Length: 140
Image 1 (cartoon, helix red, strand yellow):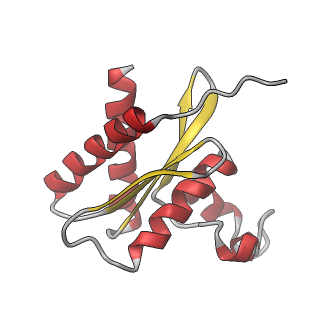
Image 2 (cartoon, helix red, strand yellow):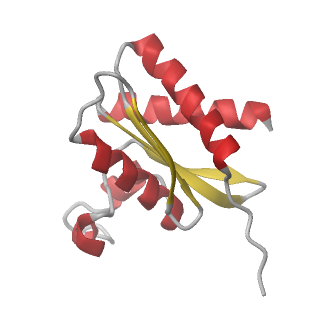
């Protein structure tokens, strides 16, 4: 048997609250997804004005970050022609995201979940994701 540490709904709400606060500061309504360590959705928030098309993208960014244990922008760099994971974005029916905005949530060196943000630029999405993680780490 193994013991698994994962985010719960209270943790997800802290991550979402931190992300929503930063999205408000930068003036970009976002779609925010939180997954457990296996990439399964725990919670989702589409802020008023968040792009409908960003719903699935945010969920898939959180899935990628948690399940692959890697930030989505890192896959972006590694998936260019000639790079080690070229073409990976077509894996798993296109669920693996290679655009910034998905970050693993790490506690004591272990990935316990993922946060995915979409509706802004990749830099805005990454900043909002980091703000969610910062709020979570500050609480713990």
